[in-house]
Image 1 (tube, rainbow, N blue to C red):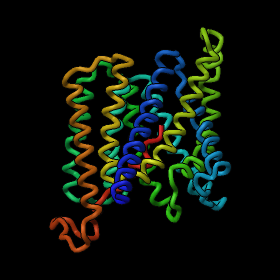
Image 2 (image 1 turned 120 degrees about the vertical axis):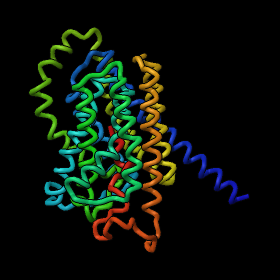
Image 3 (image 1 turned 90 degrees about the vertical axis):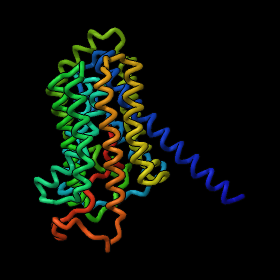
Image 4 (image 1 turned 90 degrees about the horizontal axis):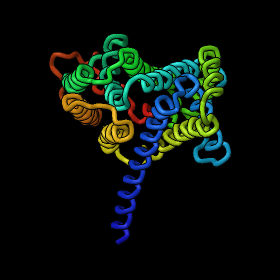
Length: 340
Protein backbone atom coordinates (compact mmCIF):
# COMPACT_ATOMS: atom_id res chain seq x y z
CA UNK A 1 0.00 0.00 0.00
CA UNK A 2 2.78 2.39 0.98
CA UNK A 3 4.69 1.59 -2.23
CA UNK A 4 1.57 2.19 -4.36
CA UNK A 5 0.96 5.52 -2.65
CA UNK A 6 4.57 6.56 -3.19
CA UNK A 7 4.36 5.61 -6.89
CA UNK A 8 1.14 7.59 -7.30
CA UNK A 9 2.71 10.63 -5.64
CA UNK A 10 5.76 10.39 -7.93
CA UNK A 11 3.56 10.29 -11.03
CA UNK A 12 1.45 13.20 -9.77
CA UNK A 13 4.55 15.27 -8.99
CA UNK A 14 6.01 14.59 -12.44
CA UNK A 15 2.77 15.52 -14.23
CA UNK A 16 2.38 18.67 -12.12
CA UNK A 17 6.00 19.68 -12.71
CA UNK A 18 5.64 19.29 -16.48
CA UNK A 19 2.30 21.13 -16.55
CA UNK A 20 3.59 24.16 -14.61
CA UNK A 21 6.74 24.23 -16.78
CA UNK A 22 4.59 24.24 -19.91
CA UNK A 23 2.32 26.92 -18.46
CA UNK A 24 5.11 29.34 -17.55
CA UNK A 25 6.90 28.77 -20.85
CA UNK A 26 3.82 29.41 -22.96
CA UNK A 27 2.83 32.36 -20.76
CA UNK A 28 6.20 34.08 -21.27
CA UNK A 29 6.12 33.55 -25.04
CA UNK A 30 2.51 34.69 -25.41
CA UNK A 31 3.01 37.73 -23.14
CA UNK A 32 6.12 38.82 -25.04
CA UNK A 33 4.38 38.45 -28.39
CA UNK A 34 1.36 40.31 -26.99
CA UNK A 35 3.64 43.15 -25.83
CA UNK A 36 5.23 43.51 -29.26
CA UNK A 37 2.09 43.00 -31.36
CA UNK A 38 -0.94 44.11 -29.34
CA UNK A 39 0.59 46.79 -27.09
CA UNK A 40 2.78 48.03 -29.96
CA UNK A 41 5.73 48.17 -27.53
CA UNK A 42 8.39 47.38 -30.12
CA UNK A 43 11.42 47.58 -27.84
CA UNK A 44 12.94 44.12 -27.34
CA UNK A 45 16.05 45.41 -25.53
CA UNK A 46 13.90 47.12 -22.90
CA UNK A 47 11.70 44.04 -22.48
CA UNK A 48 14.79 41.86 -22.07
CA UNK A 49 16.24 44.29 -19.52
CA UNK A 50 13.00 44.17 -17.49
CA UNK A 51 13.22 40.37 -17.54
CA UNK A 52 16.80 40.44 -16.25
CA UNK A 53 15.91 42.85 -13.44
CA UNK A 54 12.94 40.72 -12.35
CA UNK A 55 15.08 37.57 -12.52
CA UNK A 56 17.85 39.19 -10.46
CA UNK A 57 15.38 40.20 -7.72
CA UNK A 58 13.58 36.84 -7.85
CA UNK A 59 16.78 34.80 -7.57
CA UNK A 60 17.98 36.95 -4.65
CA UNK A 61 14.69 36.42 -2.79
CA UNK A 62 14.68 32.66 -3.46
CA UNK A 63 18.25 32.13 -2.25
CA UNK A 64 18.80 34.75 0.47
CA UNK A 65 15.27 35.26 1.85
CA UNK A 66 13.26 32.09 1.28
CA UNK A 67 16.33 29.82 1.38
CA UNK A 68 14.90 27.58 -1.37
CA UNK A 69 18.41 26.71 -2.54
CA UNK A 70 21.78 27.27 -0.87
CA UNK A 71 23.97 29.89 -2.51
CA UNK A 72 26.86 28.40 -4.47
CA UNK A 73 29.90 30.46 -3.53
CA UNK A 74 31.95 31.82 -6.43
CA UNK A 75 35.30 33.57 -6.04
CA UNK A 76 35.24 37.28 -7.06
CA UNK A 77 37.89 36.62 -9.70
CA UNK A 78 35.83 33.79 -11.20
CA UNK A 79 32.75 36.01 -11.38
CA UNK A 80 34.49 38.23 -13.93
CA UNK A 81 36.65 35.58 -15.58
CA UNK A 82 33.97 32.88 -15.86
CA UNK A 83 30.50 34.20 -15.08
CA UNK A 84 30.74 37.48 -17.02
CA UNK A 85 31.50 35.88 -20.45
CA UNK A 86 28.66 33.41 -19.87
CA UNK A 87 26.35 36.30 -18.94
CA UNK A 88 27.28 38.14 -22.13
CA UNK A 89 26.29 35.16 -24.31
CA UNK A 90 23.22 34.59 -22.13
CA UNK A 91 22.21 38.23 -22.70
CA UNK A 92 22.62 37.94 -26.47
CA UNK A 93 20.57 34.74 -26.47
CA UNK A 94 17.60 36.31 -24.66
CA UNK A 95 17.70 39.52 -26.70
CA UNK A 96 17.77 37.65 -30.02
CA UNK A 97 14.83 35.53 -28.89
CA UNK A 98 12.77 38.63 -28.09
CA UNK A 99 13.86 40.35 -31.32
CA UNK A 100 12.72 37.35 -33.36
CA UNK A 101 9.35 37.35 -31.55
CA UNK A 102 8.79 40.91 -32.70
CA UNK A 103 9.11 40.01 -36.38
CA UNK A 104 7.98 36.39 -36.82
CA UNK A 105 5.09 34.27 -35.46
CA UNK A 106 5.53 32.19 -32.31
CA UNK A 107 5.10 28.97 -34.28
CA UNK A 108 7.97 29.81 -36.64
CA UNK A 109 10.21 31.07 -33.84
CA UNK A 110 9.68 27.93 -31.74
CA UNK A 111 10.39 25.67 -34.71
CA UNK A 112 13.67 27.47 -35.45
CA UNK A 113 14.60 27.24 -31.77
CA UNK A 114 14.41 23.46 -32.14
CA UNK A 115 17.47 23.78 -34.41
CA UNK A 116 19.68 24.22 -31.30
CA UNK A 117 20.83 20.56 -31.09
CA UNK A 118 22.11 20.75 -34.67
CA UNK A 119 23.96 24.04 -34.15
CA UNK A 120 25.55 22.66 -30.95
CA UNK A 121 26.86 19.54 -32.66
CA UNK A 122 28.08 21.48 -35.71
CA UNK A 123 29.84 24.10 -33.56
CA UNK A 124 31.61 21.45 -31.52
CA UNK A 125 32.66 19.67 -34.71
CA UNK A 126 33.87 22.76 -36.59
CA UNK A 127 35.38 24.89 -33.81
CA UNK A 128 36.30 22.43 -31.05
CA UNK A 129 37.12 19.51 -33.39
CA UNK A 130 34.95 17.02 -31.54
CA UNK A 131 33.68 13.99 -33.40
CA UNK A 132 30.39 12.18 -32.88
CA UNK A 133 28.82 8.82 -33.45
CA UNK A 134 27.12 8.47 -36.85
CA UNK A 135 23.78 8.03 -35.11
CA UNK A 136 24.01 11.58 -33.76
CA UNK A 137 24.47 12.94 -37.29
CA UNK A 138 21.64 10.77 -38.60
CA UNK A 139 19.28 12.07 -35.91
CA UNK A 140 19.94 15.65 -37.06
CA UNK A 141 18.64 14.99 -40.60
CA UNK A 142 14.91 15.29 -39.77
CA UNK A 143 15.60 18.39 -37.64
CA UNK A 144 17.39 20.19 -40.46
CA UNK A 145 14.87 18.95 -43.05
CA UNK A 146 11.92 20.07 -40.95
CA UNK A 147 13.43 23.52 -40.40
CA UNK A 148 14.04 23.95 -44.14
CA UNK A 149 10.50 22.87 -45.02
CA UNK A 150 9.01 25.17 -42.37
CA UNK A 151 11.11 28.14 -43.53
CA UNK A 152 10.24 27.68 -47.22
CA UNK A 153 6.51 27.35 -46.54
CA UNK A 154 6.23 30.03 -43.80
CA UNK A 155 3.48 32.47 -44.88
CA UNK A 156 4.65 35.23 -42.50
CA UNK A 157 8.36 34.89 -43.25
CA UNK A 158 10.58 37.79 -42.21
CA UNK A 159 14.30 37.59 -43.01
CA UNK A 160 15.39 39.72 -40.05
CA UNK A 161 13.29 37.75 -37.56
CA UNK A 162 14.50 34.47 -39.07
CA UNK A 163 18.16 35.51 -38.74
CA UNK A 164 17.60 36.68 -35.16
CA UNK A 165 16.08 33.31 -34.21
CA UNK A 166 18.83 31.40 -36.02
CA UNK A 167 21.62 33.38 -34.36
CA UNK A 168 19.76 32.88 -31.09
CA UNK A 169 20.26 29.13 -31.60
CA UNK A 170 23.97 29.73 -32.13
CA UNK A 171 24.11 31.82 -28.95
CA UNK A 172 22.33 29.07 -27.00
CA UNK A 173 24.76 26.49 -28.34
CA UNK A 174 27.77 28.69 -27.55
CA UNK A 175 26.51 29.22 -24.00
CA UNK A 176 26.06 25.48 -23.52
CA UNK A 177 29.53 24.67 -24.85
CA UNK A 178 31.25 27.44 -22.88
CA UNK A 179 29.55 26.28 -19.70
CA UNK A 180 31.60 23.08 -19.75
CA UNK A 181 34.92 24.93 -19.64
CA UNK A 182 34.07 28.21 -17.89
CA UNK A 183 31.90 26.73 -15.14
CA UNK A 184 34.06 23.65 -14.56
CA UNK A 185 34.06 22.84 -10.85
CA UNK A 186 30.78 24.64 -10.12
CA UNK A 187 27.56 22.62 -9.98
CA UNK A 188 25.04 25.34 -10.81
CA UNK A 189 21.29 24.76 -10.72
CA UNK A 190 18.93 27.01 -12.69
CA UNK A 191 18.30 29.39 -9.74
CA UNK A 192 22.00 29.93 -8.93
CA UNK A 193 22.67 30.36 -12.65
CA UNK A 194 20.14 33.20 -12.80
CA UNK A 195 21.41 34.61 -9.48
CA UNK A 196 24.87 35.20 -10.94
CA UNK A 197 24.12 35.84 -14.61
CA UNK A 198 21.03 38.08 -14.50
CA UNK A 199 22.73 41.03 -12.72
CA UNK A 200 25.63 40.92 -15.19
CA UNK A 201 23.15 40.71 -18.10
CA UNK A 202 21.27 43.73 -16.72
CA UNK A 203 24.51 45.69 -16.50
CA UNK A 204 25.47 44.72 -20.06
CA UNK A 205 22.09 45.56 -21.59
CA UNK A 206 21.01 48.65 -19.60
CA UNK A 207 23.12 51.20 -21.48
CA UNK A 208 22.37 49.91 -25.02
CA UNK A 209 18.64 49.75 -24.18
CA UNK A 210 18.70 53.33 -22.89
CA UNK A 211 20.68 54.69 -25.85
CA UNK A 212 18.89 52.78 -28.62
CA UNK A 213 15.33 52.61 -27.28
CA UNK A 214 15.09 55.28 -24.55
CA UNK A 215 13.63 57.95 -26.84
CA UNK A 216 11.20 55.51 -28.43
CA UNK A 217 10.00 54.25 -25.05
CA UNK A 218 9.40 57.84 -23.87
CA UNK A 219 7.41 58.62 -27.02
CA UNK A 220 5.41 55.42 -26.57
CA UNK A 221 4.55 56.47 -22.99
CA UNK A 222 3.26 59.81 -24.30
CA UNK A 223 1.06 58.25 -26.99
CA UNK A 224 -0.06 54.95 -25.45
CA UNK A 225 -3.76 54.95 -24.47
CA UNK A 226 -3.15 53.23 -21.12
CA UNK A 227 0.59 53.01 -20.36
CA UNK A 228 0.16 51.98 -16.71
CA UNK A 229 -1.72 48.77 -17.49
CA UNK A 230 0.75 48.07 -20.30
CA UNK A 231 3.68 48.41 -17.90
CA UNK A 232 1.97 45.99 -15.53
CA UNK A 233 1.86 43.43 -18.36
CA UNK A 234 5.52 44.08 -19.21
CA UNK A 235 6.63 43.65 -15.59
CA UNK A 236 4.33 40.64 -15.33
CA UNK A 237 6.17 39.03 -18.24
CA UNK A 238 9.44 39.58 -16.38
CA UNK A 239 8.08 37.95 -13.22
CA UNK A 240 6.75 35.05 -15.30
CA UNK A 241 10.17 34.70 -16.96
CA UNK A 242 11.76 34.20 -13.56
CA UNK A 243 9.02 31.73 -12.57
CA UNK A 244 9.94 29.80 -15.73
CA UNK A 245 13.51 29.43 -14.46
CA UNK A 246 12.23 28.20 -11.11
CA UNK A 247 9.88 25.75 -12.84
CA UNK A 248 12.84 24.31 -14.77
CA UNK A 249 14.58 23.65 -11.45
CA UNK A 250 11.47 21.84 -10.19
CA UNK A 251 10.86 19.76 -13.33
CA UNK A 252 14.51 18.60 -13.44
CA UNK A 253 14.17 17.12 -9.95
CA UNK A 254 10.76 15.55 -10.66
CA UNK A 255 11.27 13.76 -14.00
CA UNK A 256 13.73 11.50 -15.77
CA UNK A 257 15.93 12.64 -18.67
CA UNK A 258 13.78 10.79 -21.22
CA UNK A 259 10.55 12.26 -19.84
CA UNK A 260 12.12 15.72 -19.87
CA UNK A 261 13.14 15.37 -23.52
CA UNK A 262 9.71 14.19 -24.70
CA UNK A 263 7.91 16.78 -22.58
CA UNK A 264 10.17 19.50 -23.98
CA UNK A 265 9.20 18.71 -27.55
CA UNK A 266 5.51 18.41 -26.68
CA UNK A 267 5.87 21.80 -24.99
CA UNK A 268 6.86 23.32 -28.32
CA UNK A 269 3.78 21.81 -29.99
CA UNK A 270 1.63 23.10 -27.13
CA UNK A 271 3.09 26.63 -27.48
CA UNK A 272 2.58 26.61 -31.25
CA UNK A 273 -1.06 25.51 -30.95
CA UNK A 274 -1.85 27.95 -28.15
CA UNK A 275 -0.25 30.91 -29.92
CA UNK A 276 -2.16 30.10 -33.11
CA UNK A 277 -5.45 30.18 -31.20
CA UNK A 278 -4.61 33.65 -29.84
CA UNK A 279 -2.85 35.42 -32.71
CA UNK A 280 -4.41 33.49 -35.65
CA UNK A 281 -1.24 33.64 -37.73
CA UNK A 282 -1.69 31.70 -40.99
CA UNK A 283 -0.14 28.21 -41.03
CA UNK A 284 -0.15 26.15 -44.22
CA UNK A 285 -0.45 22.33 -44.08
CA UNK A 286 3.14 21.92 -45.32
CA UNK A 287 4.34 24.40 -42.70
CA UNK A 288 2.64 22.38 -39.94
CA UNK A 289 4.12 19.20 -41.43
CA UNK A 290 7.62 20.72 -41.35
CA UNK A 291 7.14 21.70 -37.71
CA UNK A 292 5.99 18.15 -36.88
CA UNK A 293 9.04 16.65 -38.63
CA UNK A 294 11.32 18.94 -36.61
CA UNK A 295 9.74 17.93 -33.30
CA UNK A 296 9.93 14.24 -34.16
CA UNK A 297 13.58 14.74 -35.11
CA UNK A 298 14.30 16.47 -31.77
CA UNK A 299 12.66 13.60 -29.90
CA UNK A 300 14.71 11.05 -31.87
CA UNK A 301 17.88 13.06 -31.24
CA UNK A 302 17.16 13.07 -27.50
CA UNK A 303 16.59 9.32 -27.57
CA UNK A 304 19.87 8.67 -29.42
CA UNK A 305 21.79 10.97 -27.09
CA UNK A 306 20.31 9.22 -24.06
CA UNK A 307 21.21 5.77 -25.44
CA UNK A 308 24.79 6.83 -26.19
CA UNK A 309 25.22 8.51 -22.81
CA UNK A 310 24.18 5.29 -21.08
CA UNK A 311 26.19 3.01 -23.35
CA UNK A 312 28.37 0.59 -21.44
CA UNK A 313 32.13 1.32 -21.55
CA UNK A 314 32.85 -2.02 -23.25
CA UNK A 315 30.43 -1.41 -26.13
CA UNK A 316 32.27 -1.40 -29.48
CA UNK A 317 32.80 2.01 -31.08
CA UNK A 318 32.15 2.93 -34.69
CA UNK A 319 34.99 1.21 -36.64
CA UNK A 320 35.83 4.20 -38.84
CA UNK A 321 36.13 6.62 -35.94
CA UNK A 322 39.30 6.53 -33.80
CA UNK A 323 38.60 6.20 -30.08
CA UNK A 324 40.59 9.35 -29.23
CA UNK A 325 38.46 11.49 -31.52
CA UNK A 326 35.10 10.11 -30.54
CA UNK A 327 32.61 12.11 -28.51
CA UNK A 328 29.73 9.77 -27.74
CA UNK A 329 27.25 12.43 -26.60
CA UNK A 330 27.28 16.14 -27.53
CA UNK A 331 27.16 18.88 -24.95
CA UNK A 332 23.52 19.85 -25.14
CA UNK A 333 22.04 20.53 -21.73
CA UNK A 334 18.38 21.03 -22.56
CA UNK A 335 17.61 21.51 -18.90
CA UNK A 336 19.21 24.97 -18.71
CA UNK A 337 18.49 26.29 -22.20
CA UNK A 338 14.86 27.10 -21.80
CA UNK A 339 15.09 30.51 -20.22
CA UNK A 340 13.27 33.24 -22.06
